Image 1 (cartoon, rainbow, N blue to C red):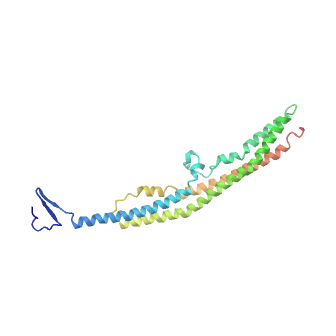
Image 2: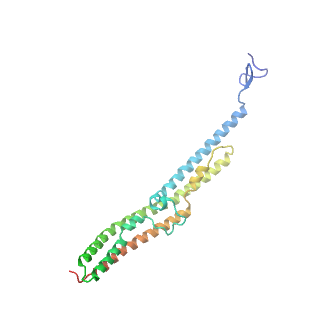
Image 3: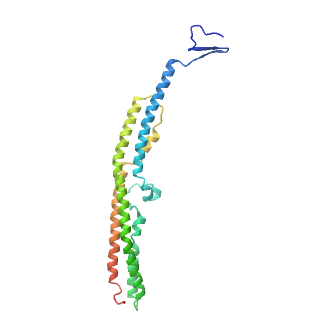
Length: 229
């Protein structure tokens, strides 16, 4: 066994069936260049993914507050969030009890036990309305705070996107797929944020109106059944 004429040990190995060339310096350099480019792009992708995850966390509360299993409707501006908590304020139940009390008072003879029972139910609802309203206010205030943080976090996402674009431009030989990271970055738009904020303010107004309704119902109930002992 011998070396091919004009070749060194580093360039070729002579074997029985022929000569197997070693990787050329040019090929090794190209592979190293792709690896370096991929590493740079992957680091930029990681930065973008981290920033996008922080932005997504600002909207995490919507999964339990919005209808259709957390999927945002196309127009959120008039959506009432935290509907269960608003229902707990009891405006509907108080109104129904008032109507029942009035009907009982107008019966002949007046059904005073029913009047008293419905008035007692209204009094109970009044006692619960305040804490229920406070819960809605706490939830909406917390969500508004998270949306406020989204403004800063979105700026970080935009900066990370711009950085990724510059890294890709500087490393055109990279083979890293950045599609998933870009899709995550676009998950929550400024338009959606504005609509969610409008929906939260709308929810606060609805909760306050419900609590006021309960108070009004209690005042109206006081005048019902005055002939009853």
